[in-house]
Length: 110
Figure 1 (tube, rainbow, N blue to C red):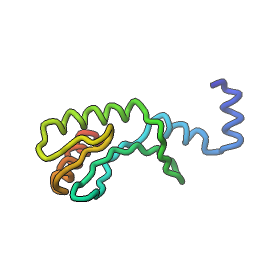
Figure 2 (cartoon, helix red, strand yellow):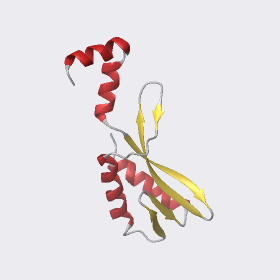
Figure 3 (cartoon, rainbow, N blue to C red):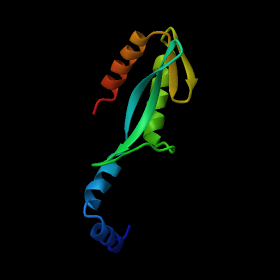
Figure 4 (cartoon, helix red, strand yellow):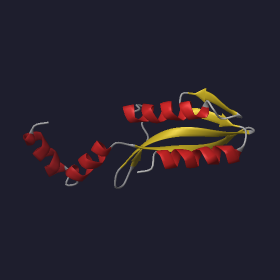
């Protein structure tokens, strides 16, 4: 973007440079555990956050794809878990799901 437009945006939004820096860092991808019937569902979610707002978008980034591919690769070796959709796995026990969340957080720690 040209410097003229950047200056205009910065004039209208004083936090423009700070927000731009956060957007360049990319989203946070987290595991969310839900209960569905007798299963514990692990769902990956992409969160774009800034100072006052949290954005959940339907358009996913390339970074999200990396997390999903890694997760699916890891879950193929686990017993009692099924992949139900692109970003969801169904665990038979909550304990197994929580173990996977710990592994996920260790792998993708920032």
